[in-house]
Image (cartoon, rainbow, N blue to C red; front, side, top):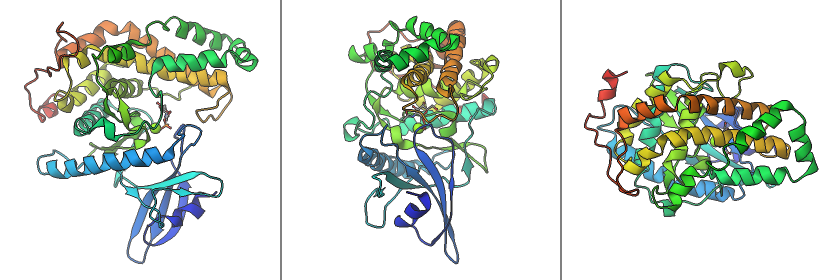
Length: 396
Ligand code: GN1
Ligand code: MG
């Protein structure tokens, strides 16, 4: 059903003026709806949830309520001492009181508030922008660090469990269509060789979790650069949006995802592979921004896996795109033939670049967070940092 027919079913004052497509999400369909009364205007985000990806859209809204209740309270409590105004979207109920409107075709629609006077970008703009991305992620993870994970549903089973994406690839390669796609180009065969070389390593985070070295906490799930909102007035980060993937997980998934997205100045959709590189200045800026809040909750064991998380989440996204290409583009939305294959090649180029810079990246992490001690894994000692949350402004 059309978004314009759905929008008026939500409890929003005024008359619908316009609905337009927004952003370039790879999974859900997003729209901006503008409502006006004689004296005011309200702009809201309307989304059609991809039911092929999210089997239980109800879980998303349940998590969103738990998360926003927790975070909104906390932001208010901390507002007097915060260095900026933080925002977080709010659920807008349907007129019938529900969280969703389900249309005649069984599609789930939801409405949330728009973050005021802020923008996000598809690609990193500057070192300052990278610092803000790290700062916003660290702040988010800190404010949810005391949110009990057992209150959250698993909205997307297997999300960020890298070995599972290998299973999906193996399954797709069981079919003759899948095998034909693999054989269709030199690039596809190169990608396959690339992932195979890293198959044994890809459970690095899950192994650490199973051993009890890393604990499951509340995560955002998708802190890529286009989900970091920058305040139009101040140029500072003000919010992290796209809360569909908030769920229990490892904070490393978030850290790695933010790094792989923000340290590649070419962006994940580029057609120019030559421009894809893991930029060390951007990496340093993100770590500095992230550290301001993250040092309050990062454990020794957490620090030990930060480099792995950067390499792994870039690799995992490449593997997810590649497996989807082999499966016939059934998960991510695509705009041209071979789109998922190109996206995979971008991520693998980035992985190459990350691997080549391992020593430098690790040195930066050690410098900013301190060298992770050889203390037994699972020890919860926190970073021995002493500088204050405001010192970053002099270090940029
Ligand atoms: C998808 O739908 P979107 O664009 O917010 C994907 C993320 C990927 C991202 C890569 C639920 O996010 O995991 O990192 O594409 N979301 C889901 O751009 O799979
Ligand atoms: Mg997302």
